[in-house]
Length: 255
Image (cartoon, rainbow, N blue to C red; front, side):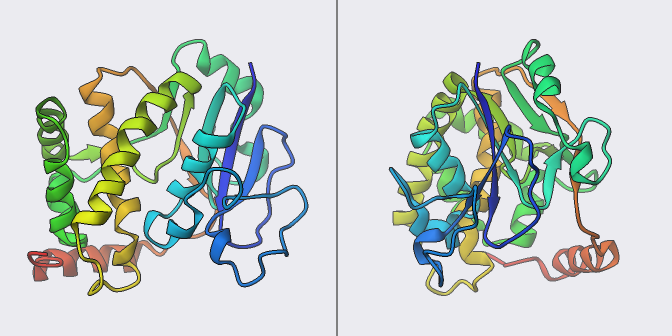
């Protein structure tokens, strides 16, 4: 069984040498140096792709590429600074190995990062305090009643899987991507993002994060959670300050 974990990156960065991992340059269709691809990397604008949408779909352009073009039986997506790690330690020497992945796959065909827990607010309130609420509400309208029921259930919770990080068997990814991407493509036609700032224009990547748990719940999927590490330092004081400011100001307010 062939497994491949794609590492989404938009810039040069140190990459693991383990052949399990494959760096993929996201948004390559609009790269300033389209021919300057590092050795061993692939670009997300080859084959069947949505590379040109990277500014609004984020790392999902890499997931789409893998779904449509990879010949692997198991497909994963991580970020250039964020990896699965069983011992939860930083450094490329500590990231998930092929042997470890094989052991995990004996139990489940879906592997996800540990959930982020909010405690004091729901997944829905967290989103609308940070982003425009219209796309999230509109995404719900684009689902059938069964998925809407799961949407409501998931968005009322206070924990969720984020970052669009995942590892799935080919069959599981086919089912997930075949459901998620059509919703995002339809949503793209339904909402006007011309007034959004560059960060908020990444809306379809943000919505995609929220759709994963809806899919899992609606289809009663079983999965394993694995710790993940962020390879760079994070300023938790600044992050906490921005969170409190969003709470006090009501986030994006309305749209």
